[in-house]
Image (cartoon, rainbow, N blue to C red; front, side, top):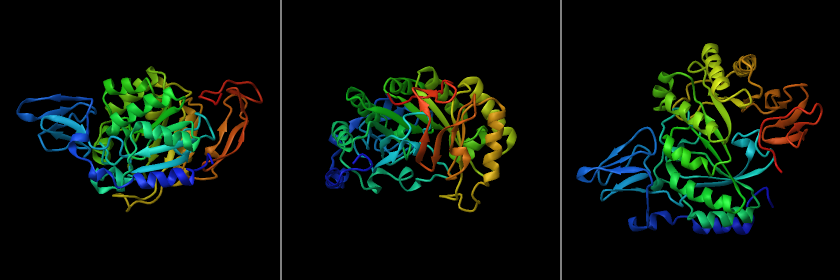
Amino acid sequence: MKRALTLLSFLSLVLLAFTHSLLSEEKLKEAYYYIKLDKGKVRCVLCPRQCLIPSGKRGFCGVRKNIGGKLYTLVYGKPCAVHIDPIEKKPLFHFYPGSKAFSLATAGCNLRCKFCQNWQISQARPEETITYNLPPRRLIEEVKKSGCKVIAYTYTEPTIFYEYMLETAKLAHQNGIKNIIHSAGFINPEPLRRLCKYLDAANVDLKGFREEYYQKTCSGSLEAVLRSLKILKEEGVWLEVTNLIVPGLNDSPQEIREMCLWIKENLGVNTPVHFSRFYPAYKLRNLFPTPVKTLERAREIALSTGLKYVYIGNVPGHKGEITYCPRCGRVLIRRVGYTILENNIIYGRCKFCGEEIAGRWQE
């Protein structure tokens, strides 16, 4: 029963759907990070965009609205996607391998990535999606029913449903449930540090290593993401990094080497790095999938810089999915897709040579 929602739990979620549009503005939750200005305007300071929002309007993300001079979140307790996933799908390879994560997302995003795989919800407004009525306490009840020990804030950009994520994460820790996030890292330092108190692990999409690429392809900022990565490391959150390699846009060996050297210097050689294969989607349907040789070259470059744990994603069955011991070279975790076939890590160490393996392993 831990591999999926029970029928009863699933039906209860279905019955809770379609309720978002019935809620009045009086029941909305006030946002945590904004500044009131004159003439009824507000400035959202949750993410680096610092949106200036007139009364009656929304910010760039589409889910934070100025109502009468106060900023409200339109998605508190209103996820549009609720699933149970293998934790390897996040992807997290060094955090509770083989476990299941109760995963959720709301509509909206503070980026505009042209290659987005979930654009149907990330680029939608809340009223354009079917939502579940799952405030934090009710969500925790559903997680317990499912048997999951982990909640994943994922699919879209969790930053934009910050209040919902933060309050749920607090309750999760009170109930012995871990919190993980898959994020683009486009968030301001103060709210990120506050969230880190309740985060156990994070996978951050480092989409490229050129400011121009971030601006043109994602409508974001590299500098802000690098800052977030440093903060997560400083705050002791288990951190893994994903780099989606898009052919012809961010696949130069020089750029990949510079990125890996930055990770080594600022995050450490034990930081797992996932090079993920691009498939045509959203506004980049004209491109071909990333050649496997390009991914293999990126992995070789990363290993040559001294990074210990480097993976290839979206190529099921490739040896780049396997965790190898950095000392003896033996197979520690053998994966095919999101399935674990073999695990030779015992109490955080290699079963064969005793090498300590960086990560967060199940008690």
